[in-house]
Image (cartoon, rainbow, N blue to C red; front, side):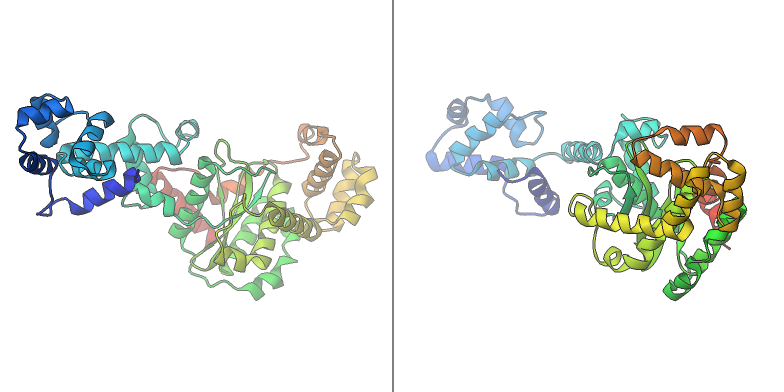
Length: 399
C-alpha cells in the first residue's frame, strides 16, 4: 500500500480542481453497468444506504478498512486507488483535522517533549498547536515539516556516546539558528587564526576579561564563539559549525569549570583549522563513521593540551600537585591559569580509574566555575522575545 503522506499530498494538490471522479460517481457508474439498484448494491457490500450516502458525501466520521476493501472488490480497483478516491471526497474540515494529526505526529516523532518541558523550552506538552507555533516562530519556519530540513553540520566534541536523539538535534538546530541571527560580518581569516592561536594561552590568566578578549579577537577573524545551555540527554562539550561559509563554535556548561572551557575552545579551534572543508561539504553524522570521529577527536584533544599545558609540563608538576603554592608558581612561569593544570591532572587520573580528584579540587576551590565567562556569550532561551535581548547583549560583547 502506498504511503499515507504520498496519498495525502496528491489530495492536497488536487483540491479545488474540477473533473475529479468521486467515489459516488464510480459506484453509480458501476451499478448502471451491472443494472443494480441502490438497494441491491447496499445488500452486496453489506452497508446501509444511509451510511453509504454519508461515505460518498465525505461526512462519515469513520470508515473502516473492511468497508473500503468491499468497495475495492466491487469496483474492481486497487485498494490504494479506492482510499485515494475516498479521501478526495472528504470535507475540508475533515481533511484539516487529518492535517492537524499529521503535524502533531511529526512533533512527537522529532521532539523530546518531556525533555523540552524539563528544560523550560515548553510549558505545555499537550497543546500541539501552541508547540508548533513556538517551534515555527523560533526557527523561522513556515511549516513544522521544514524543521527536518534544517541544516545540521556539526562535528561534535562529545562524551563517548554514539546515539543521536531528538533533543540533540534540537540543540544543534538551535545553535545554527543562533549563528544565523548573529550573522558575523567579518570574513574568516585562517592566516590570522594561525598567527594568534599560540598566543591565546596567557589570556587564561586574566579570567573573564581574558576570555572575552580572545572571543572578540576570534570574532574579528570571522569566528563566532557562543555558549549555549545543555539540554536533557545532550552530552556535548562543544561543537563546530560552518554558517554562511564561516566557522562558528559553541561551548557548553557540561563540565562546569574554568579550565575546561579553555581546553574546549582550543579543541574546537583545531576543528576550525583542520576540518573546515569537511564541515562545509559534508553533513557529519556521529553514527556513520565513529572511527574517523574518534581519531579526529583524539587529535583535537592532543592539540588543545599541547597549546595550553603539555604532557611533559604536567609530568614535571605531577609529584607536587598537592602543593598549591608551587603549582601556582609553575603556572605563572608557563603563562597559564592554575586551574588548567588541576583540570588536566584530574582528567588524567580519571582515565587511570580514579575519579576523586575533580571533587577534591572543587572542594579546595582549585577549579573555579566557568559561568562568569560563559554567561557573557550565552544564549540560553528558546523564547523569541527573550532571545532577541540576549542576542543584543552578546553582540555588544563582540564589538
